[in-house]
Image (cartoon, rainbow, N blue to C red):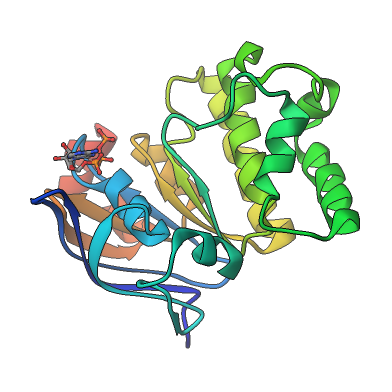
Length: 237
Ligand code: ATP
C-alpha cells in the first residue's frame, strides 16, 4: 500500500550541527501518526524537515511523489499543512485575515469562502471573533486559529507541533476532540508531535519514539502504550 507520507533516512542540519540522523516514519492516508520523545529529541525538527524549512538529506514521499527537493510552497500545494510550534499566527491581524492568509496559495474565491465557513463550523468561537486581533485571543483560541489557518490551504496531511502546549486540560481535550473530528470527517491525515504522550497515543493509530534524532521504537500506538520503557519515561505509569 502506498503511504500518504513516507519518510526515509531523513537527516537534518542547523548550520553544521546535525539534529536528525536518519528518521523513518509513515502516515497512512486518513491515518494519525504521533511522534513522541523528550525535549530536544528532534520532533519539531522532523516536522520542519518534512515541510522543507531546514536543510535536509534523505527522502520524503507524498502519495508516492518525491518532494524532498521541492520548495516549501510547492509542498504546501501538494497537500501538506503545517501548524508550527508557537502557533505562528499574526498577532496584529484579525482572525479572518489570518485565515485568508492561510489560503494564499489558492485563487478559487468561492472555495475559500466555503472553507472559511467549514473551518468556522469546527471552531464556532473563531466565527464569533472573526474581526478580533489574533494577539488578543486566549491561548486555546490561538491554537484553534493556527489549526484553522493550516486547514485553509486545503491539506491532505496536517503536521501539528504540540497543539496542547501551555493550555489548560479542558482546552486540550477540546482541541484533541476537534482534531479527531477533522480526521474522521474530512479524512485529513495527521502527524502529531506531542509532549503529552498519553493523549497522543490515545488519538493516534501509529507512533514513533524519537531520542537524540533517531527513531528508537515505532509501531502501533497500542504497542508503544504498552511498552515498559515508554510507560516509565513518557506515561508515568
Ligand atoms: P522540544 O519538545 O523541546 O521542542 P524537540 O524534540 O522538538 O524538542 P527539536 O526542537 O527538534 O526537538 O530540537 C532537536 C535538536 O536541534 C536540539 O538539539 C536543538 O537544540 C536543535 N535545534 C533546534 N532548533 C534549532 C535552531 N534553530 N538552531 C540550532 N539548533 C536547533
